[in-house]
Length: 252
Image (cartoon, rainbow, N blue to C red; front, top):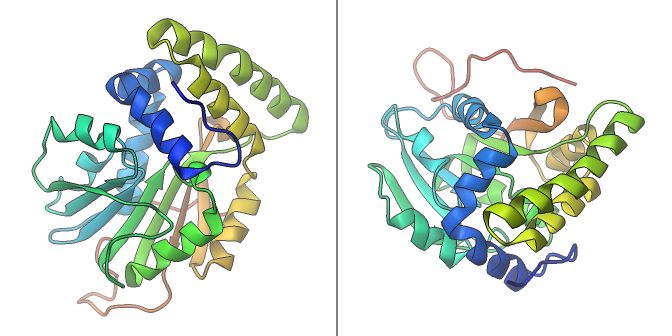
């Protein structure tokens, strides 16, 4: 299979994920030691999609994450630029979830189309993350929510460096045995090491026009969930935006 480089050319990244589609969810579960299930639950609570709300799940892959946003009557568009991932997901349809091919840098949706936009482990793969964050802002209604779940960095340079060396050695080894696609997980380890730490990502989200940016570390900072909202509000009875999370945010 082809292997994407850190210049993240869209065609290369899409082709790499096409090759992983059939075993992608299994690999995630094994490589995270099952923690990916907990991470998805945290993201679903942060998105807090209420009845009738529209959620855009970017880099949705096979739609495993998308299904978590429809439990309270919301509707979710699972969007990805890997056709292989979308085909794998469409073979297991779920009520309230639709699959759409699209690029995060040029989303095929009208302005202010969604109550919430979320992206899990995908912003890191966008060729221009800043432009992607601005495009997400465009398709979110005033007062709508953004939830970004992405790999983070552990506290302390020495601990973080040890973790990065572990990823570089362990991820390709396990991936080779389970899928034969070690190259993709070498890229994964490199892209995590190259990704900014949580405070810098929060700054970049704010620079793209989002407000009330905060984050919550999961698994000691291996993963972080960043939350923000689009400026403006839509008034509702009770004074709380529809679907707003009641979880106590972790602000850093």
